[in-house]
Length: 541
Image (cartoon, rainbow, N blue to C red; front, side, top):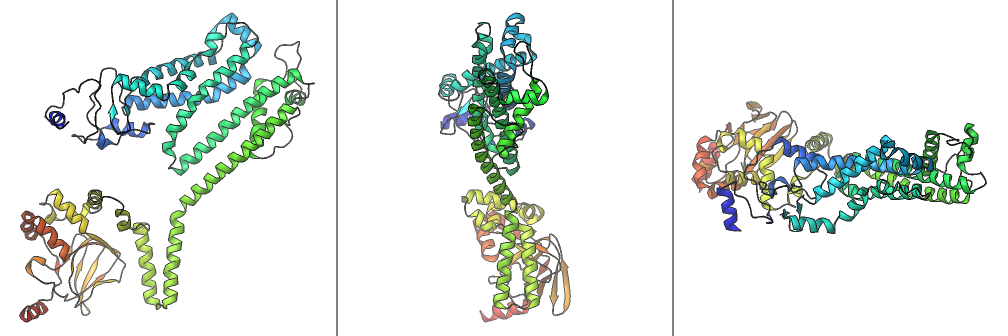
């Protein structure tokens, strides 16, 4: 494997042996192409590898990568066809298939209705999708991309092949010319086998479950789709009951209300398909969301049993949807709830310890500013849950502006920058907050990234510092930390990066080649060290 990786680096166009399992490795070229971004957005697959685990595609001819743009677009096409199938297949099976239509199909052929032509195209697309799945790579349990045709076929046979195959069989094309009376009902039942593909779609759409708005939208669409299915079943029951009962079913009542009575001697008598479908959908929606209004009511035993089942389903869906909605709302306002809870703790602390008013106001203002800046997220607590190498990358990203704007850091290696980023601490200061008092030990070097501060010696403003200014002391010139000769106070809300003296010396000891360059290019805007005190302390030692 080592030799294979070396060969890959030397020659980017060497093809791997057929059927070889390709272990994921880091991309040599990390350039982000537009097609890759489109694939990430459009991809419906749950097993798409992250970009850094992918290598340059080397596959057999006529094999499709599961993370390719073509596969992403094709999955969306199949998804739209499955949605079409979920809506029109039950409707066609319940409302459009009839003995009269069966007779017409025998006389004018399969293209008798435009909807039949669309169904034929859908069947062809599903069969093509099966062929494509036999030539599409997959990721095994070891996070390896498998491109061998035989292994792809075995994996597909063990997975979704049976469901895809049953959903792709054109039953109406195979049996519609039989001429038997039972043919219509059989076609309607067999066409619903296409709905099996919804299981696969639900698995793919599970990746969007982390988004509250997407979950709410999917729940509402599921509710409407189930109501549509139940409306088709409700009509099918009424149609069967009309021929067996004493004309007391809901379809006969609908015909009386609309003045369109059924007459067995007249073909097509009774309410129109639109009237029947809208009424059935109205009944299922009213039964799912409440107990109904009574203007469309079940009369026969079969209709009453079905209505009981619809009410039970509606109760379960009601609980599921409203439970998810309440969870989504709580998630949306979780940040506000945490803010108020934390503010309550601060105020209880102030009240319990009887903090005077000026200090109390500073505490509350600092809390509000810190929360607006960090949103209540403790960065140190978050970083502890990640490995050290990932912590270094995160810290390097958080301190990128600091390391890019200051000349002293531009001559360092990436390893040195990662070590420095790990040791920098971010400090937020509200207006009027004193960062360093006169006489304090200068234990850190400060880099201002936002805001303005003033240097006070007594009551006299010695200097005003702003963005990209540095204050502290030149650590390399003194063996011991000195004392500050002035006060450092924030004029506005300030964000500062500070690194402690010991941490800076530790990093410079690890990278001695960078030490000289750093000190020669570091420009301290204001040296806080009290020279007199340092002379006195050095004379004592």
